[in-house]
Length: 387
Image (tube, rainbow, N blue to C red):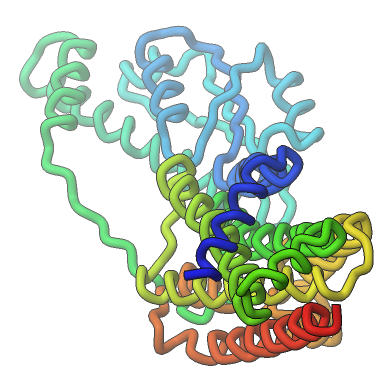
C-alpha cells in the first residue's frame, strides 16, 4: 500500500509538469500526424486533365476520374500546362479530352483519349490502370446507348441516361482482399506506420527524460525524509517503478485509442498487441529508472536521455524500415530493444500475426525489461541505503 501511495504522489507531481505533458501528450500526436500524412500521400495519385470538350458526357468522364479510388484530378488549361506539371512531378499523368469527344461518340465512332506519362519505369502504372477502368466503365454506357438508339429509337442522350441509371442499379460484385505477401518486412504506409513506431519511440524517450524526477526527488531530500518514517527502501523503489509504469501505460493507451479513433489505425490481434505494449511499457519503465540512477543532474537526464532514445529509435527502425539499410546497420539496430518491438509490429500489422508469431521478439524484449529493471532496482536501492 505504501508503494501505491508513493506512486500516486509522483503521478500527481508529473501531471503538474507542463514540459512533461507537452512531450507526453502533444508532441507524439504531431509527429504521428506529420509522418502519417507524408507517407499516406503516396497512396493517392494526382492526374492533370485538359478538358477540350465541356459537354455533359465529357464532364461525366472527368467526374468519374476524380471519384476513382486513388486518383485526384487537377484541371489545367491546356496541354502545355499539363506537361509542365508532369515534368515537375506535380502529377503522374495528363489526360487529354479532345474537343470532339461527345460528338464523335454520338456518331458511333471511336475516340482516342491520349494519356501522357513520364515513361519512367514504374511511373504511373497504377494510375493508368485506374484511368483505363474509368474509361471502360463509361465506354460500356456509351455502347449501350448507341445500341438502344439504333434498335429501339429515342435520342442518344436519353438512352445514355437510361444506361447510366441501369448501371447504378446493377448488383455490385463483392471483392475480398487476401494478403498474399505474408512475408512483408514493412509496416503499412500512412498512420499505420507512424502510430506504432511513434508509440515505441516516445514511450522510451519520455521514460528516459522522466529520470530527471528521481534525481530531483533525491536532491530535495524526499527520499531521506521518507526513509526516516517507517518506509522501507524497497517500497520507494516499487513506488517509483509503479509510477513510471503507469505513465508509460497511459501514454501507450492514449496513442492506441487516438490512433484507432482519429487516424483509423488497426492494431492487429488484440491480445498480441496488448502483450507487446505491456512488455514495451516495462522496457520503458526500466529505462526511466536507469536514467534516474545513472545521471547526476536533472538537466543531464532531460538532455541525454531523449538523445539516446532518438538514436536507438533511428537504429531500431522507428524512422525508416530496417530492410532498406545495410545488413551491418540492421544487426546493430537489433542491439536495441526498439528493433525487436518494430519487428513485432511488422508481424502483427503486415502479416496478420498473433501471439505465437511474436514470441521471439517478446522474449527478447522481456530480457531487456528484466535487465533494465534489475539494474535500476539495484542502483536505486543501493543509493537509498548508502544515502
